[in-house]
Length: 394
Image 1 (cartoon, one colour):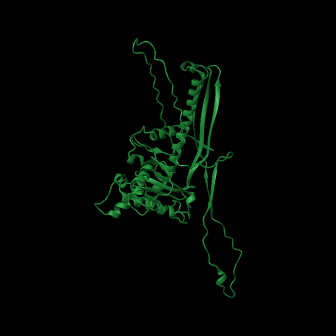
Image 2 (cartoon, rainbow, N blue to C red):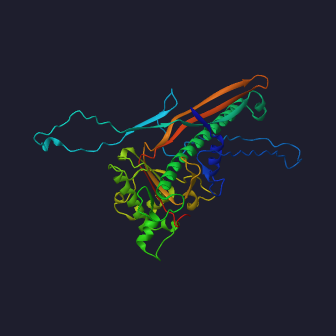
Image 3 (cartoon, rainbow, N blue to C red):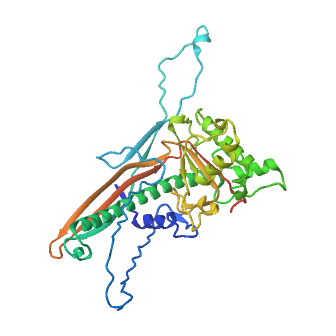
């Protein structure tokens, strides 16, 4: 079983998620990067003698559970074994029915063997990391007035670990989606030219719209999110694809397999800025909003990172090396949404547990909060990406 440590990757992803990075880093989805934590220490004295240490009058513990907003793509796992096997088969082709075309004296052989076309994919790649925490028996007592405050303090420490694990998992889920988006765009355009085309798996809606407007009337990516006509156009195109995916087709997956995705199996993830624009500029002006309302979707404020001001150009950008080939890079801006079959990607065998060890000599306990999961992408399943890149290759 292949197990890859991703502690540094998780930490780097978090730095982009929480806005510590003004620009997006090129992420290698097959490797990881680290970011540290900063601790501020200060001693406060009274303003009269300037020698007496100020007392703590009230203690507020920041202990709020973080649920995360990542799309729900975590599926059931398995306790024994290590490899995920996904088996599929090609749809057989029709042959002539000879019942209605009999010829006298001709032999009709009923003993021909028709072998089914079956294939299997194996996923044997796990990622794992741990968050350590040490809790002392006696040393922290001097900082608190009573046992209740100490208990709340320790509870806060464990709560911070839980938040860290939730934020890490949220980031890893988004990286799984980003990887599928990048693979789809690369298969459609390569690494540079994301200009206008009729490609059905990766749609540059801005270029399609500008082509309709004609030369000299083009709009920019940011202006598009304030243009009611464009928002209506984009919403209609997304709804069209959601409907088209319900029919059997080879057009909507990179592998060219015959696939269909009913609505109850369809996952839709939209960028929050686009969803807000549709709500504010479109639905409010429409008497029957159901006619233009987007399908139910998971809403995310950014794909990879927020930058330092949630600028749409940054929050809508995906800048990664391909999961299938780390030598190939995709850097695409203006991603407003992705539709995918629930079997196209996901997180399997998610496991979180804690181990501990007591040090009697120094009187403290070490806790190791561990997390393991299998993140998979299957490009034989339906995935459609919508984005608004202005210039080819930018």
